[in-house]
Image (cartoon, rainbow, N blue to C red; front, side, top):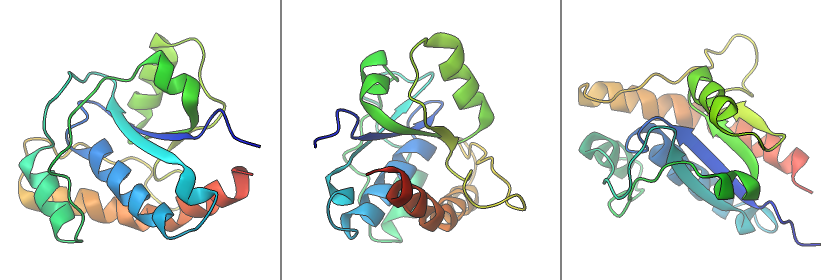
Length: 160
């Protein structure tokens, strides 16, 4: 049976730093998982994003270090249409999920933080590196990579 909800949506503020990195990392992780998980579509968007902005150069550089290309990214705002297709929404901080709840009525049942599956001792928030130095972006990327196995495990459990 085909899912009508086959989208995983990564969300941040401007869709130029965190959520694009998260999107590419998840695509990369799920591509090797086989069907049906490699059939999921993964997109990123921002709660306060414009259209067509490239990813920040530090985000591109951080991902390049793990051999993932973010060069073609174009920012987009979250739309209701995306939420209607979403199986899972992953925010970077509580504020992103709060903002979606405030501006949209019809939300998917699975709304979580990107680092929300790592257990109680993990810091769940991924702070915005925007405007900071490369080290801040590298730390941001590392905190996402650390979360990937727990997200993949969650998807495998929930996406039947």
